[in-house]
Structure formats: C-alpha cells, structure tokens
Image 1: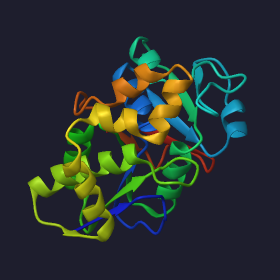
Image 2 (image 1 turned 180 degrees about the vertical axis):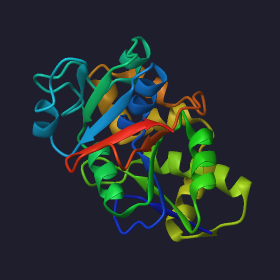
Image 3 (image 1 turned 90 degrees about the vertical axis):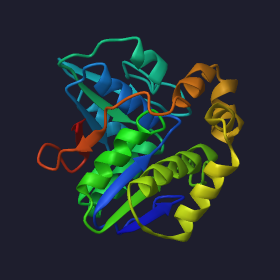
Image 4 (image 1 turned 90 degrees about the horizontal axis):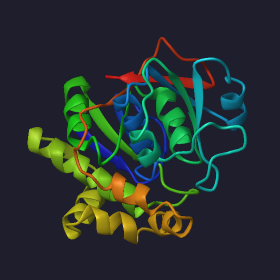
Length: 237
C-alpha cells in the first residue's frame, strides 16, 4: 500500500484521497455534518453556489476569509458548531478547499474530507476503503503550501502508519517531519501565515477551534451518484 502526501493539489489520483483544508473548509464541512446537515454540495465556482439558492438550502463560504455577498454563512467552524442544520443541504464554495476537492474527485475513487478535528476517524475510514494508495492532498492557500495543512497531513500519516505498513513518498516524509517537529497544534495553526491572517480579521477563534485533534468521528465522504458536474455531494460516511 502506498501513502502519498501532496503539499499542494496535483491530480492523477487513483484510489482514496483525503482532502485537507484545515483553515478552514474541511474543518467547517465536518462541523456542518456533525450539526445535522443532510448533505454538503461543494461547488466549482461562486456562481454555481449562488445558482442553488432556494428553500432548504444554505450558502456557506468565503472570499478573503469573509462571506461573499448573497451567502447565508461564512466559512467559520465556530459559527457552524453553534447552530443546528438538521435536514438542510449546505452549498459551500471557498477559495482553496472546494477547488482541491474538485481536483481530487476528477480521478479519485473515494474522496474524503479530513481535518485535525476528525483526523483519527478519517484515517480509519481511508484505510478501510483503500486497496492501492491513500493520497493526502493539502489545499494550501493561494497556490502556496500552508503549514497548517502539512502538519495535519503529518497527523493523518502518523495515524495511518500506526495501522499498517505503507510505502511513503517524499511528501509523506516531509509531513511527518513537520508533525514530529511541533508538538502543539494550536501553536502551529496560530503561527501559520493563514492562521495569522485570520487572526488579523478577527477570526482567531476559528483557528483555535480547528486545532482540536480527533474531537469528531464524522467523515465527509463523496457520494459519486448524488452530485453534478459543478457540485460535489458529500455526506457523513
């Protein structure tokens, strides 16, 4: 079994893909499903999200860290964790995470959303599904690698290696080195460039929330039969 970590999305995935956008799309996605959302639709574009406005649908996402015009909610896991979304469909579009999910879904057999908050559950689910390879894909920020995503990839890789033998690539070794070099996830996230940016715009509580490790057992899983070309449907797997 192969274990691969892409420090930025690259594509050409063949088996199980864990998409990681710790600050904040995948952390928020986990929170939505944990708070009862029926499904998440991750759209390819902002326009595709806005086109899905309607009864029983909530729009959530960000541009520059803040909710776009016309959206009901931002991309805040703290805001989501304080709400209840039973029976609702949430349409999400963000700057980095939703794009990474679409790239993964183009070729991946099984696509899961992973964060620090569901790291152990996501690793277990990935291991149960995989037959050849698990690829951990870091969304990054604006086309640049993010420390928070690489650290989370290292946490996931460490959990996976505890479950069995894998042939690891250089990306996995880099992520493991980062994980083993920093003991406190809250400090890693707060010290990352994107964590500092979120703090500057008043969202430091989201950064602290995202640093919780394995506090959820919910794993968003792509439903290949339930989406559309411009919207991926994720459910609690």
